[in-house]
Image (cartoon, rainbow, N blue to C red; front, side):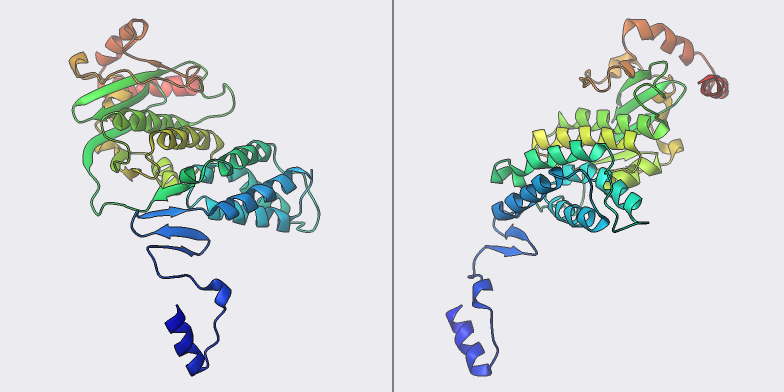
Length: 325
């Protein structure tokens, strides 16, 4: 940098010496540390402490103006570029900004969800520096392993990987138990189950393309969060699973029409041979009240009966069930 400074002085170009960065494979830019050799991007420790302090200051007050909400949101949105799981923990602040927009100078109580989201952020920002780092490597072509998920309100949820499959039945009352849910939630659960299943088949950090036929869920995952609260809660499960495996940012979702989705039939109770069943997928406690493995003996009779129905008859049965729900 000395040579650069000498030439700059001769040309009359002033430089801010305190912002000079020596030549090297690692440098700080736009608030992140970029390591060209490791091909990673990190949130600097001083930034993490600054953002954590901003959360402490926020939690010390009960009401906030629009500007205060925007300032904290901007900091955490910046950090979420390195911590994608945090993107699903910003929806409360986004809601708060919308509520405060009509009277920006009047302090307001934030939505209840904000406190829990900020507690998650505070704990996350205090993690070791190596956990505030993510890879910037994305392959030019994603492996296509023929992995699909689908859901049907009248029957259940299914995943297909190659020729193998597994299905779950939606339990009665799933729409209203613990909050309102719709087909988007069921599709998101299918995406979660598919993510868990494929992640067991490949080493951590492997980028994979998965398919679903719900455009809302597919589009929301590209933003790492959903405005639908129920769907967003499932996204949190997916993020946490990927972080635990060391596969942050490695699952990519693409849309496929229902007619070309191999998981459509199993999701409606039209099952392939049981010899092609995938291994069981462990259900987190958050999902156990809503779905049950359709290969269980208690569900086998229901599934076998549904297999005997013609597709048009099956659709009418599902429609009647939806009307009753």
